[in-house]
Length: 496
Image 1 (cartoon, rainbow, N blue to C red):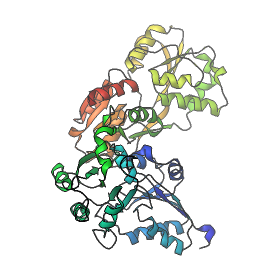
Image 2: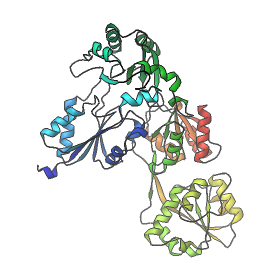
Image 3: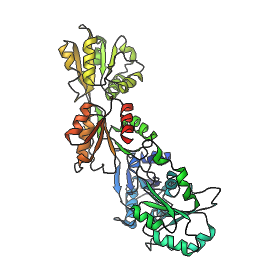
Image 4: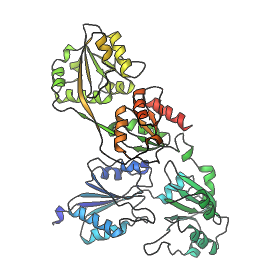
C-alpha cells in the first residue's frame, strides 16, 4: 500500500474524567475520526463527544486488568491506519505520562504510519487539584515527582526511595493502590518522617471522588478502613494537609451529583451547561433524535398558501427549527409571514422563534399542550385559520380544545422522533436521570433493557413525562414548571 493510502493515528489524552478538562484540540480531532480506540478510564462526558457514525473499539484497560494486551492494541492501531482510517487512540490522562503511548508509537513508526500526539491533563496534577491539594506550594515544597506504582515487568515498580526522600518535594504515585503498603514502608525505611501528610484520592474529578488524608504511617490502614479502591492516586507531601482548607469541588451546589441528560444531542447543551456550572458531573445519554419528514407535501402546500393563516403554533424547538429550515430551502424569509401571529408552548420554544426575528404573541402560563390549546381556543377568532407544524407523534391535548371550539386548523407533522439505538449506557454511578419528554423515557428504557428501573431516580419536566417514568417504576420528581430553569431548581432542591 502506498503511503498516500495510509491513514493516520492521533494519540489523544482524554484527561482525568471531567469532560471540561478535555482539550479543544482533542475534541476537534475526535469529531473528524473514523475510528476511536478507547480505554475504560475515559470519562462518559468525553465519550459522549464521539460522533454517532464513528466506529468505537473498546480496549478496556484498568489497573491490574488488561483483557486486551498491549501488543494487540498496537496491532489494532496499525491495521486501522493501514486501512486508510483516521484513528484516534483515546487514553485516560496523558498518553506520555505512564500511558504507554511510546510503546504504541513503535509499531506505527516501523510501518511509517503518520501520527500526532495531543497531550491531556494528567491525573497527577488535576486529581489533587480537585481535592484541594496544590502539588506545589512556595512554603513547603520546591519540586514535584510523578512515579508509577508498577512497571511492565512487575506489579510493583522498583523505586529508589532514598533518592526520593533526599530530594523531598511532593510525590505522586500513579497506579499504586495495590502497592501502597510497600510504597509507604519504602519511604519510611528511607528516613521520611512517620507523620508526613499523605493522601489517597479515588475517582478524582468525578462527582463521586473520595479522599483519605492521613499520615505516611497510617495511610494504608486508614484507606483500607474507608474502602477506597482504584482508580486512585497516592500523594505524599506537606501539601496534602492543605486539602482541609482548600477543598472546593464537593462544596458546589451539585458537586456530588452525576446527572444523565437524555435530551437529543443537539438540544442538550442548555441543560448540561446549567448543571455543569453548578458542579454536577453531566453524562450525555441522548435517548431520542429528531429528523425532518422527507418529501413533506402537506408542509409544502401550507407554505404555498402561507398567507391564508392568521396563526402559527409551535409546540417544540424542533418544530420551529424544521419549519424555518423548510422555508429557507424555498428561499422564503420572514417577510412571507407578515401579519401572522405566533403562539408557543413555553419559553424555550419562544426563544427559538425569537432567534428568527419574531416575537411571540401568545404563550400559556402553564407550559403544557392542554394549556396552549385552551388558550388558543379562547383567543383565536372563528374566521382565523391556524397552522400547527409539530411532531409526528404529537399529543391530542393541543388540538382537542380547537376542535371543541370549532376552529379551523392544519395540524401538520414536520418531524419525527426516533429512539437512538444504543444499549447499556446507564449504570448505578448515575444519581439522577433528567427526562424532558415521554419519548426520552421510552428511548432510555429501550437503551437499557437490563437496568433495574426501580432504582432510577428521575427528574421530569411535566406530568406527562412523569407518568411515563412511573410506568416503569422509577422514583419520580417533577419540576414545578415545564422549563429547563425549573428542572435545575428542582435538582438543586433534591441535592439539598
